[in-house]
Amino acid sequence: MKQFEAEIISNRAVAPGWKELVLSWDKGAGQPEPGQFLSLRVSPRSDPLLRRPFAFSGMSEDGGRVSAIYQVRGPATSILAELAPGSAIDAIGPLGRGFPRPGPGELAILAAGGIGLGPVLFLAKSLAASTLVLGFREASALPRLDLPQGCVTCTDDGSSGFRGKPSEWISRNVPSGLVRLYGCGPAPMLAALAGLAAERSWASSLSAEQWMACGVGACMGCALRRSDGAGYLRACSDGPVFSADAGRPSPVDWNPRRPT
Image (cartoon, rainbow, N blue to C red):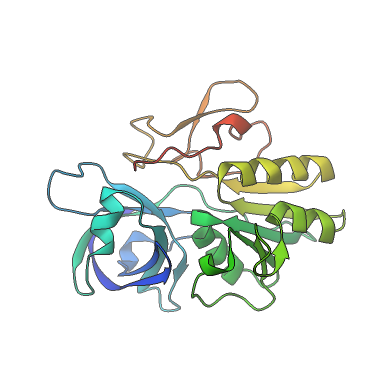
Protein backbone atom coordinates (compact mmCIF):
# COMPACT_ATOMS: atom_id res chain seq x y z
CA MET A 1 0.00 0.00 0.00
CA LYS A 2 1.26 3.46 -0.86
CA GLN A 3 -0.07 7.00 -1.18
CA PHE A 4 1.04 8.73 -4.36
CA GLU A 5 -0.03 11.15 -7.08
CA ALA A 6 -1.39 9.36 -10.13
CA GLU A 7 -1.94 10.77 -13.60
CA ILE A 8 -5.26 10.25 -15.33
CA ILE A 9 -4.54 8.55 -18.65
CA SER A 10 -8.14 8.33 -19.82
CA ASN A 11 -11.62 8.81 -18.39
CA ARG A 12 -14.11 7.58 -20.98
CA ALA A 13 -17.78 6.71 -21.01
CA VAL A 14 -18.48 2.99 -21.46
CA ALA A 15 -22.27 2.97 -20.93
CA PRO A 16 -24.94 5.52 -19.98
CA GLY A 17 -23.89 6.85 -16.57
CA TRP A 18 -20.76 4.66 -16.40
CA LYS A 19 -17.10 5.48 -17.09
CA GLU A 20 -13.75 3.71 -17.16
CA LEU A 21 -10.88 5.50 -15.43
CA VAL A 22 -7.29 4.62 -16.38
CA LEU A 23 -4.51 5.85 -14.09
CA SER A 24 -0.74 5.67 -14.01
CA TRP A 25 0.40 3.27 -11.29
CA ASP A 26 3.37 3.58 -8.94
CA LYS A 27 5.00 0.14 -9.09
CA GLY A 28 6.45 0.76 -5.64
CA ALA A 29 2.92 0.41 -4.26
CA GLY A 30 2.84 -3.27 -5.19
CA GLN A 31 0.82 -5.15 -7.78
CA PRO A 32 -2.97 -5.03 -7.30
CA GLU A 33 -4.87 -8.30 -7.22
CA PRO A 34 -8.42 -8.82 -8.54
CA GLY A 35 -10.88 -7.88 -5.82
CA GLN A 36 -8.66 -5.23 -4.23
CA PHE A 37 -9.38 -1.51 -4.49
CA LEU A 38 -7.77 1.92 -4.40
CA SER A 39 -8.92 5.04 -2.59
CA LEU A 40 -9.04 8.36 -4.44
CA ARG A 41 -9.31 11.94 -3.26
CA VAL A 42 -11.33 13.31 -6.13
CA SER A 43 -10.82 16.99 -5.25
CA PRO A 44 -8.17 18.98 -3.35
CA ARG A 45 -10.99 21.00 -1.78
CA SER A 46 -12.66 20.08 1.52
CA ASP A 47 -15.92 19.14 -0.21
CA PRO A 48 -16.21 16.23 -0.68
CA LEU A 49 -14.08 15.60 2.39
CA LEU A 50 -13.82 11.81 2.31
CA ARG A 51 -12.00 9.66 -0.18
CA ARG A 52 -13.89 7.25 -2.39
CA PRO A 53 -13.06 3.55 -2.98
CA PHE A 54 -12.85 2.14 -6.51
CA ALA A 55 -12.27 -1.52 -7.31
CA PHE A 56 -9.54 -2.34 -9.80
CA SER A 57 -10.90 -3.52 -13.14
CA GLY A 58 -7.55 -4.23 -14.77
CA MET A 59 -3.83 -3.65 -14.95
CA SER A 60 -1.53 -3.22 -17.94
CA GLU A 61 0.99 -5.95 -18.75
CA ASP A 62 3.89 -3.72 -17.77
CA GLY A 63 2.25 -2.81 -14.44
CA GLY A 64 2.34 0.90 -15.21
CA ARG A 65 -1.40 1.49 -15.53
CA VAL A 66 -4.53 0.42 -13.68
CA SER A 67 -8.21 0.88 -14.46
CA ALA A 68 -11.47 1.17 -12.56
CA ILE A 69 -15.08 1.17 -13.78
CA TYR A 70 -17.39 3.49 -11.88
CA GLN A 71 -20.94 4.80 -11.92
CA VAL A 72 -21.55 8.54 -11.94
CA ARG A 73 -24.10 8.79 -9.15
CA GLY A 74 -23.17 11.47 -6.59
CA PRO A 75 -21.12 14.64 -6.07
CA ALA A 76 -17.77 12.87 -5.77
CA THR A 77 -18.13 10.70 -8.87
CA SER A 78 -19.56 13.70 -10.77
CA ILE A 79 -16.34 15.59 -10.00
CA LEU A 80 -14.26 12.58 -11.00
CA ALA A 81 -16.18 12.23 -14.26
CA GLU A 82 -15.11 15.74 -15.31
CA LEU A 83 -11.38 15.20 -14.75
CA ALA A 84 -9.48 15.21 -18.04
CA PRO A 85 -6.49 13.12 -19.12
CA GLY A 86 -3.30 14.63 -17.76
CA SER A 87 -4.91 15.62 -14.47
CA ALA A 88 -3.29 14.49 -11.22
CA ILE A 89 -5.20 12.68 -8.50
CA ASP A 90 -4.21 11.54 -5.01
CA ALA A 91 -4.37 7.74 -4.74
CA ILE A 92 -3.83 5.14 -2.02
CA GLY A 93 -3.59 1.44 -2.79
CA PRO A 94 -3.76 -1.41 -3.25
CA LEU A 95 -6.18 -1.99 -0.36
CA GLY A 96 -8.28 -4.88 0.93
CA ARG A 97 -8.33 -8.63 0.40
CA GLY A 98 -8.79 -9.90 -3.13
CA PHE A 99 -10.26 -13.02 -4.67
CA PRO A 100 -8.49 -16.32 -3.89
CA ARG A 101 -7.42 -18.48 -6.80
CA PRO A 102 -9.50 -21.57 -7.61
CA GLY A 103 -8.45 -24.69 -5.74
CA PRO A 104 -7.18 -27.85 -7.48
CA GLY A 105 -9.84 -29.11 -9.85
CA GLU A 106 -12.29 -26.30 -9.08
CA LEU A 107 -14.32 -24.90 -11.97
CA ALA A 108 -14.33 -21.09 -11.74
CA ILE A 109 -17.76 -19.52 -12.33
CA LEU A 110 -17.77 -15.71 -12.20
CA ALA A 111 -20.87 -13.52 -11.89
CA ALA A 112 -21.16 -9.74 -11.88
CA GLY A 113 -23.76 -7.04 -12.11
CA GLY A 114 -23.72 -3.25 -11.97
CA ILE A 115 -20.75 -1.79 -10.17
CA GLY A 116 -19.46 -5.32 -9.55
CA LEU A 117 -18.38 -5.62 -13.18
CA GLY A 118 -14.88 -4.20 -12.67
CA PRO A 119 -13.34 -6.58 -10.12
CA VAL A 120 -14.90 -9.67 -11.70
CA LEU A 121 -13.70 -8.66 -15.17
CA PHE A 122 -10.20 -8.22 -13.73
CA LEU A 123 -10.42 -11.69 -12.20
CA ALA A 124 -11.66 -13.27 -15.43
CA LYS A 125 -8.69 -11.88 -17.36
CA SER A 126 -6.28 -13.25 -14.76
CA LEU A 127 -7.57 -16.84 -14.90
CA ALA A 128 -6.56 -19.34 -17.53
CA ALA A 129 -10.10 -20.74 -17.71
CA SER A 130 -13.41 -19.54 -16.31
CA THR A 131 -17.05 -18.88 -17.18
CA LEU A 132 -18.05 -15.22 -16.89
CA VAL A 133 -21.74 -14.34 -16.47
CA LEU A 134 -22.76 -10.67 -16.48
CA GLY A 135 -26.13 -9.21 -15.58
CA PHE A 136 -27.71 -5.95 -16.79
CA ARG A 137 -31.17 -4.38 -16.73
CA GLU A 138 -31.34 -4.03 -20.51
CA ALA A 139 -29.24 -4.19 -23.67
CA SER A 140 -28.49 -0.43 -23.62
CA ALA A 141 -26.63 -0.92 -20.31
CA LEU A 142 -24.05 -3.31 -21.80
CA PRO A 143 -20.63 -1.61 -21.52
CA ARG A 144 -18.34 -0.88 -24.45
CA LEU A 145 -15.48 -2.95 -23.09
CA ASP A 146 -13.25 -5.78 -24.25
CA LEU A 147 -15.10 -8.71 -22.69
CA PRO A 148 -13.56 -12.22 -22.62
CA GLN A 149 -14.58 -14.60 -25.37
CA GLY A 150 -17.55 -16.75 -24.39
CA CYS A 151 -18.87 -14.24 -21.87
CA VAL A 152 -22.56 -14.81 -21.06
CA THR A 153 -24.81 -11.75 -20.84
CA CYS A 154 -28.11 -11.71 -18.98
CA THR A 155 -30.72 -8.96 -19.09
CA ASP A 156 -33.79 -8.48 -16.92
CA ASP A 157 -35.99 -7.73 -19.94
CA GLY A 158 -34.44 -10.26 -22.34
CA SER A 159 -33.28 -7.56 -24.76
CA SER A 160 -29.83 -9.20 -24.96
CA GLY A 161 -28.66 -12.71 -24.16
CA PHE A 162 -30.37 -14.74 -21.44
CA ARG A 163 -33.58 -13.34 -19.98
CA GLY A 164 -33.10 -13.36 -16.22
CA LYS A 165 -30.44 -13.03 -13.53
CA PRO A 166 -26.88 -14.43 -13.54
CA SER A 167 -27.80 -16.73 -10.64
CA GLU A 168 -30.65 -18.17 -12.72
CA TRP A 169 -28.38 -18.84 -15.71
CA ILE A 170 -25.79 -20.49 -13.48
CA SER A 171 -28.43 -22.61 -11.74
CA ARG A 172 -29.71 -23.90 -15.09
CA ASN A 173 -26.41 -24.34 -16.91
CA VAL A 174 -23.70 -25.27 -14.40
CA PRO A 175 -23.95 -28.86 -13.16
CA SER A 176 -23.19 -29.81 -9.59
CA GLY A 177 -19.55 -30.62 -9.02
CA LEU A 178 -16.31 -29.07 -7.85
CA VAL A 179 -17.05 -25.37 -8.37
CA ARG A 180 -15.87 -22.10 -6.89
CA LEU A 181 -18.46 -19.36 -7.40
CA TYR A 182 -17.17 -15.79 -7.55
CA GLY A 183 -19.39 -12.72 -7.49
CA CYS A 184 -19.69 -8.99 -7.06
CA GLY A 185 -22.72 -6.82 -7.58
CA PRO A 186 -26.02 -5.65 -6.07
CA ALA A 187 -27.16 -7.04 -2.72
CA PRO A 188 -29.99 -9.26 -4.11
CA MET A 189 -27.56 -10.81 -6.58
CA LEU A 190 -24.99 -11.60 -3.88
CA ALA A 191 -27.66 -13.10 -1.66
CA ALA A 192 -28.87 -15.27 -4.55
CA LEU A 193 -25.33 -16.42 -5.32
CA ALA A 194 -24.67 -17.21 -1.67
CA GLY A 195 -27.89 -19.23 -1.53
CA LEU A 196 -27.03 -21.12 -4.71
CA ALA A 197 -23.54 -21.94 -3.44
CA ALA A 198 -24.96 -23.25 -0.17
CA GLU A 199 -27.57 -25.34 -2.01
CA ARG A 200 -24.97 -26.92 -4.32
CA SER A 201 -22.22 -27.17 -1.65
CA TRP A 202 -19.95 -24.99 -3.78
CA ALA A 203 -17.07 -22.93 -2.47
CA SER A 204 -17.78 -19.24 -2.97
CA SER A 205 -15.94 -15.93 -2.82
CA LEU A 206 -18.21 -12.87 -2.88
CA SER A 207 -17.20 -9.22 -2.81
CA ALA A 208 -19.21 -6.71 -0.77
CA GLU A 209 -19.33 -3.30 -2.46
CA GLN A 210 -19.50 -0.90 0.48
CA TRP A 211 -19.04 2.80 1.15
CA MET A 212 -15.67 3.18 2.89
CA ALA A 213 -14.16 6.25 4.51
CA CYS A 214 -10.64 5.36 5.65
CA GLY A 215 -10.15 2.17 3.64
CA VAL A 216 -7.81 0.63 6.23
CA GLY A 217 -10.16 -0.60 8.97
CA ALA A 218 -9.80 2.28 11.40
CA CYS A 219 -13.10 4.16 11.19
CA MET A 220 -15.52 1.18 11.21
CA GLY A 221 -17.72 3.02 8.71
CA CYS A 222 -18.00 -0.09 6.52
CA ALA A 223 -18.90 -2.56 9.28
CA LEU A 224 -21.06 -5.53 8.30
CA ARG A 225 -22.66 -8.03 10.64
CA ARG A 226 -21.20 -11.55 10.46
CA SER A 227 -23.51 -14.29 9.24
CA ASP A 228 -22.71 -16.35 12.36
CA GLY A 229 -23.71 -13.48 14.66
CA ALA A 230 -20.24 -13.21 16.19
CA GLY A 231 -19.70 -9.49 15.81
CA TYR A 232 -18.84 -7.44 12.76
CA LEU A 233 -16.57 -7.46 9.72
CA ARG A 234 -14.89 -4.48 8.11
CA ALA A 235 -15.44 -4.55 4.37
CA CYS A 236 -12.24 -2.62 3.69
CA SER A 237 -9.76 -4.73 5.66
CA ASP A 238 -11.50 -8.06 6.37
CA GLY A 239 -12.80 -7.97 2.78
CA PRO A 240 -14.09 -6.75 0.46
CA VAL A 241 -13.93 -10.38 -0.68
CA PHE A 242 -15.37 -12.90 1.81
CA SER A 243 -15.02 -16.64 1.36
CA ALA A 244 -15.67 -18.43 4.69
CA ASP A 245 -19.36 -19.18 5.25
CA ALA A 246 -19.32 -18.22 8.93
CA GLY A 247 -17.03 -15.29 8.37
CA ARG A 248 -19.00 -13.50 5.70
CA PRO A 249 -21.59 -10.76 6.06
CA SER A 250 -25.14 -11.57 6.97
CA PRO A 251 -27.44 -11.59 3.88
CA VAL A 252 -29.26 -8.53 5.22
CA ASP A 253 -25.97 -6.65 5.27
CA TRP A 254 -24.86 -7.35 1.67
CA ASN A 255 -26.61 -4.12 0.69
CA PRO A 256 -23.94 -1.45 0.06
CA ARG A 257 -24.22 1.96 1.65
CA ARG A 258 -22.91 4.70 -0.62
CA PRO A 259 -23.28 8.46 -0.75
CA THR A 260 -25.65 9.82 -3.37
